[in-house]
Length: 259
Image (cartoon, rainbow, N blue to C red; front, side):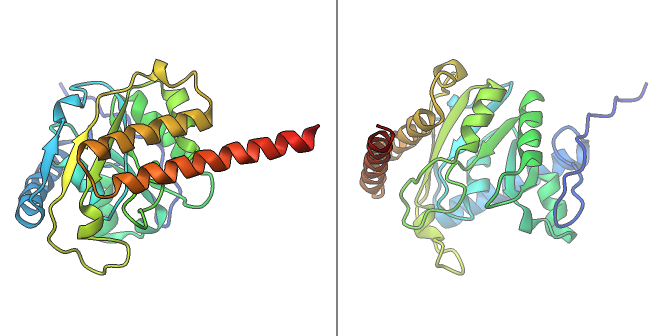
């Protein structure tokens, strides 16, 4: 009796043809994922003294959408090294240029997205992986922080939450900005902490407007940052209040012109 071939999504348009080689495709993928996980655990402890909090908040089975702040290139592997389940990632299309790097990305559940514009293919793939019961991570800020603070949440997040109807797990990384900020060529040793928040039921979010949902998620991330006593938490809170005030100002202006 032969094993059934796992469902493989259609190739995604990218710099080079994308091939799904991730979770569920065989023992090679499992070994590669496990090997990378152990190696990166060792590196994380040795160079960054990584400490993990709230790992029990990740669902043991079933789909969930992980929303993580984005401080550095270290973030994708930092959130996965402490978990027993595999995570699926959205990565910028320019990383998929073929060769060994693309092969590793495909084997570790990453798939491409076009930056700076809407990408219906990446959106469908995100929903597809959630319907398969996977853990999908998104960085809702869409780009690395310029100052370590948590920025605005992109509109695509609300679309996925509404369509997928899965629990949302907020995650915050702190210290990665100091370890490898945007203006550093190479990382440096600096203590890093990762905290997994409690799952938020989809029912708690789907009734909100896109703006309300973005603010809600941002507040949850900032609350986790405050739990870690992050030096960036105050700036994150201040930026949020300023953005809310700007939004209200725009609303008042639009109402004045509509009279």
